[in-house]
Image (cartoon, rainbow, N blue to C red; front, side, top):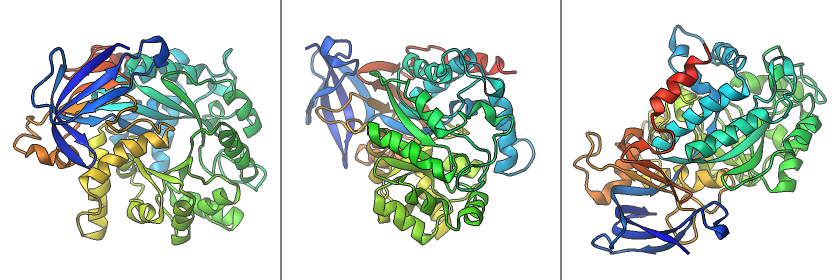
Amino acid sequence: MQVTTYWLEHAWLDPTVEPGVAVDVSDPSEADADGVGRITAVRKEVATPPPGAVVLRGLTLPGLANAHSHAFHRALRSTVQVGSGTFWTWRETMYSVADRLTPDTYHALARAVYAEMALAGITAVGEFHYLHHAPGGTAYADPNAMGEALIAAADEAGIRITLLDTAYVSSAIGDKHSGKAPDRHQQRFSDGTTEAWAERASLLKDRPHARIGAAIHSVRAVPAEQLATVAEWAAARQAPLHVHLSEQTAENDACQAAHGCTPTQLLAEHGVLSARTTGVHNTHLTPADIALIGGSGTGTCMCPTTERDLADGIGPAVALQKAGSPLSLGSDSHAVIDPFEEARAMELNERLRSRTRGHWTAAALLRAATVDGHAALGGRDAGVIEVGAVADLVTVDLNSVRTAGAAPRLGAETAVFAASAEDVTDVLASGREVVRDGQHVLVGDVPRALSEALAALH
């Protein structure tokens, strides 16, 4: 077995930072590697780099997980900051971008967005994918052309993807059997029924860098009597299942009016909540909702930069975690792509609400960004620097203008509360070098790739 040794000047080996750590990584291209390099040895107290080792100066973390992404929303950055409004007015601008995408332009955009994620230290993304068909709802010759474009884009950008293929069949809550018909924008999202969604989604296959999961867009977009179809599809495959949950109070009000219960209660009644399920946002919850989510082991993916950008509100993350809900983090609409900002924003939002400090340690926030984030995407062998784990290493500069002067033993605190995506210098994902000295080695000029992909949409 061919092995590469990496010498880490400082490494976060949860919960402590250790100096001088040597990590051996298997070659992902070997026949028995299944395309994924793994950590084969971790040796502490290695004072100097072993001969031939790749030297990583700074603080090295496990790979970071972006548990919630809509890649095409990256096209909205800055453009939606003109004027005022609400989530619902923002949504109209989002629809106009969705209307213009093709499999080719979506591939180019997603490739650049995933490369931007890699530069920020993200080694795996959960893509909440509902842009399935051509304008008007006509299926492409390959009914999964848009999903395949995303899978290819992630591979070319050097990161893993969990494609959360999303059921979206109605525009708003109707009765328990059917919702209101999709509007002209949403026709691209809809398969008509969840049975038709399941038939199409079943054509997608896992591969070394890609895992196929499922999503329920929301209780607005999937009628109550069709929720179980999606939950059962995911359960049969032991696949991750995600759902936008109580992001807006209008969703709660509509659900209460139609079904006499909250969205969380509706999902529980139809078998959606489980330890493989993640609720995204989980913002406007009742105490009973929190108990249902935590008691079922359902995870919570917080997306603080998007939640504040859209004026959604601050979710009860502390109460959810205490109730038993594992926390993960996502960049969602990509108002910014910076997992360190997402991690610290979760703590800082709670400080603003409670007017007290220290709801999570830096190590706990890093767990949300690493091991628990990967677990939410079905990657229970990632997010740690341990023997047998997927070989994801992310190195953060400890001498930038943001991080200089901090004691190395406080590396976790420095990463979460001082560093930014700009401080990531090197990234190894699945044993493959993706970022070196702050430059993407596969895509090359990521700003140019983003500019060209975005220009093609105008």
